[in-house]
Image (cartoon, rainbow, N blue to C red; front, side, top):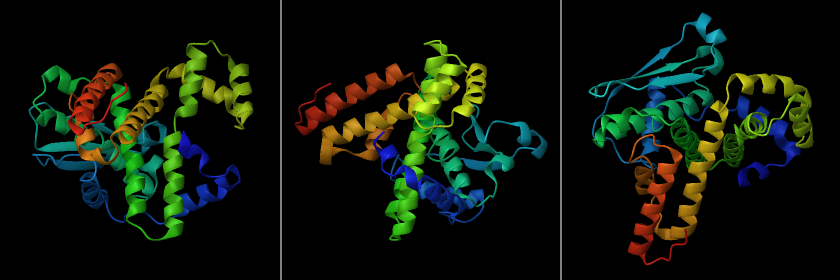
Length: 291
C-alpha cells in the first residue's frame, strides 16, 4: 500500500484530470500497440517459442453498452498454436488510442493473460494444469503486468510531468479493487449491512452515498472483485519480498517465469512454488533465507 500515499489527497483531482487527458503513451492501432507491449515484455518474461497471430475484435455496440467487461481474452484450444483472440469493449474504453487501451491490451494480451496461457502450453504442463483457471492467480498476474507497464513507461521518459503522471497511474492501479475487496469480506464474512458499509466509507473519506450501489454490486458478484484485489496484492508482495531478500541477485524475468511455471494455479500452490524457488535461489547465492 506504499504507493497509495505518494500523492497528497489535495492533488488527486488535478492528477486524475491530467492523467485522463494526457497524451497516449503509444499511439496507433491495437495491433501497433502490441508491438510496443512485446518490447516491454522482454523486461518481464521469457520470449515465447511460438508466435501466435493475435486477432483484435470489438463487441457489438449494443452489447457493449450493457456489458460490465472492458475486454476479455478467451483461452484457445490446447492444440492451437497459431491464433489467439482478444475482444475489446469500444464503449467502456473510448478512444482506440487512449492509455486505457494500452493497459487493457497488456492485461488481457501481452504479457498478461494471453502470454501466460501460451507460455503454459509451451511448458508442456498437463492438460488439466494448462486449462485450469484460478481467477486470483490470473488476475493477480495481469494486474501486476499493468503496474510494471507504468514503471517501464516512466523509465523510458525524461519528462518530469510525464513521470509524475506515471506515478499517479501506478498508485491508482495498485490501490484499485482494494476497497471492493475489503467490503466483500465485510459483507459476506463479517455480515455488514448497508449502514455499516456507509459508515466504513465515510471513515475513510469516501462518499458514503455510494454504499447502496456498492452493497448491491458485491451481493450480486461475491468474491469477483476480491480475486483481483487479493490476487494483485499477493503478486506484488511476492515480488517485493524477493527483491528485498535477493538484492542484486534478483532477476525479474527468471522470477516471473517461476511464478507462471505451473499455470494459473491456486494461491496456495503459488506460495509453495515461491518458497521452493527462494530456498534454492538463496542457497545458490549464499544468502540466509527466512521464510
